[in-house]
Image (cartoon, helix red, strand yellow):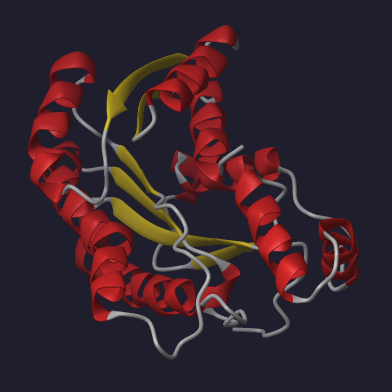
Length: 246
């Protein structure tokens, strides 16, 4: 399960009407069914972060169907594992478009709705590699770190208009993405996914991977009115994994 699903389910549980976006029709329908099955309201809209030229049409469709946008959860897919050295320029450029530039463009396009309402929430999901770089994830470490600087700067620009901008840094959450990364690491180290997971869990003070719904609860809090004085912040949902204080 992708973290984005838990964001949407948690928000729907708080009474938010959710525009579910993504590239895969089947997963979009699954998410909408999950939300509506629990009594929430949601509608699916196809959106590919690698195709920013389509954003205006998608946002127009959302406006027509659901009205102005008050909460934006930025969450891109993870790039392929890689070392820092030897990555083709075309790969860097493509990943920058999907992971950084696209999120910035989307945010710029929804800010007018938030300004008009005098209220808004911008929540951007990154990864623990943004503050504690992870081996063999050089692209992710680099590009997600850029989002921290952007979000902090944006927060100071829009705070007086009732809009907050915050970052969530998930640690090891039990999703398909981490299952894939554990499998890649196991192959690289001539080990097994189970052994890799056991080693990973031993490095987490909480002693386990996080639950997707625990991540969703953190996102829902940052989107709430109760979090109106929290902006420009970085919230770790990591079970104590990241060793640094800042």
